[in-house]
Length: 122
Length: 108
Image (cartoon, rainbow over all chains, first blue to last red; front, side, top):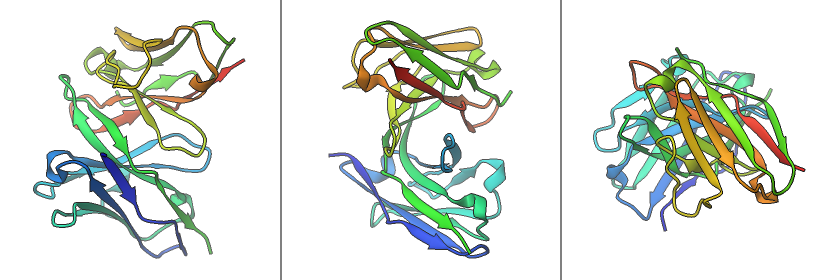
């Protein structure tokens, strides 16, 4: 079946980096953009950006420009999210999601990974 | 505009009808998407393109959009409808995804 399997929980100290992976199965990886979102404890959903698995093009929400990287490995059918210079308030569950667009060119997310908890603590 | 506004908390007696709303200028142009999230779970797509239901979403869940407001209606609310509901759309003029702050739905 169609699924996105994310890597396990991570703990990091402030100022360090972390990489989260998202492996797709059950569909053609290059057929759908992969988006990344996060959710801080007790908070709402925050969209981070997307990657086009076909060519590696990316787009980010403004607050993530310059310190977040999204990559993909088409041979593995996997996307990755790397966050650098972590701060305490980057503690969150990070989700990858398979995206489609409707007739209004609005993204929607039909398939989600289970999420990866990244904890930033000294 | 880059804001989508939702009421933080809504409750409904079991079996009654409830409407959850989402307001934002971008909804005058672009469609609304709705997700439901239960504690400890990833969000689940319940409505896309203003009113379309993915397979597996029951017919008691419906939605519409008028002007700057999108609405999600649950007719005959069940206990399993509890959760946090998030609306989503896109920012005017670019490919940025927006989310509302979420509505916590309690079925009494």
